Image (cartoon, rainbow, N blue to C red; front, side):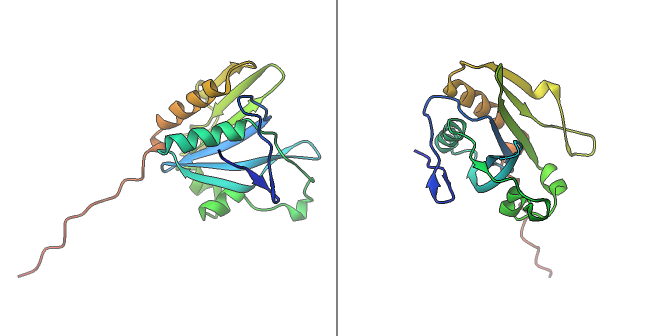
Length: 179
């Protein structure tokens, strides 16, 4: 079982039920990056620590992590003051300084539960290589959809992405000895 810890306490999960309001995660270079999405007292959502990073090819762990993240509440945090707003926990975790660098090699997934449905959005890519909305990458599920069905869809969709493939390694022949 995947335990989600925030500020020293385990976040409650509700196995088999979709509880969250909003989840975001990223696929990049065969990694799945799942930040904790918290709801501020003002009502907007922000990404906070912890951020889980895992190999997307570890099917059992990825599925278990998605089940856990979708079956727990979004933690509530105080609304940050503008001067206190942190940088991006995702960029910090990935060792990057700019979103542009990350966007060129990643896909963003957003899963949102409203009063009517559960919607999955995945970004497309514009001519500049950066994220853009792509209506073909939206899918809605009925509220009663079993959690396992949603996870199966997400996992299959992620594995079909070029971003899920390991980064290629260029293998060069050894240098020739000069005679």
